[in-house]
Amino acid sequence: MSKTRVLLVVSTALVGCGSSPKHAEMVSNAPNAPASPLVDRGRVIVHVGGHNQGALTAYEITNGDLKWTWTGDGPSYASPIVADIGGVRQVITQTQENIIGVSAIDGRLLWRRPFSTEYTQNIITPIVLGNTVIVAGYQKPTSAFRIVKMGDQWRTEDVWENPAVSLYMANAVVVGDATEFCVGAAGCATTGGFAVSTGGAVGAAAAVESTGVAAAAVCESTYAQRGAWASS
Image (tube, rainbow, N blue to C red; front, top):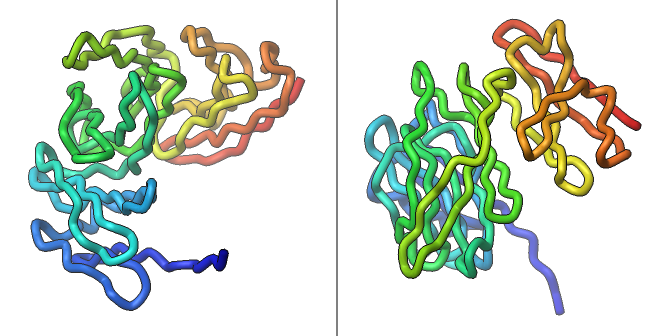
């Protein structure tokens, strides 16, 4: 079977592959919301739009045909991800003022949690571990919530919150067996990175004890950036 490489381009008002881009007719992409597109099972999913007006949108990757849209909030800087939770494939992302999960098949809103940061800076891409979602933001605690399905209804419930660790422009990464993940913190210019367990505990980046594998964190603050590497 031959394989074809395609170039996906998301510009101010165009979404498409190869030589046949499609016009994002509902709203054009704002320059202050440069999220990366998601490619999943033959579809390109991108949050186009601007402040207070947006459309999380899925296009057919082969021809750019519109498959579905969700227009409940404006876009953020965060990029969408996809996960199978409760037997349903979901697109999960931070929007302008929320964290949402929509059906990857038809774009139907499954659940929503209010989440906003100062100066409208929702930036961090969520991490999904099983049915638990870990989120953070500028001057916000790193926290986790669980996605629960009760019959035909979806809801979220708090799992833990850690005000000692906050993310700004660097995403966290999962480490090893996913009992810990590494993040940067607002004070990382002096403290380095942190290893944070899924239970919310914080330890030094130099001692990722539960996995015994190398871990990497990108520390970022308003004024400084620094890489922190840890190994057992």
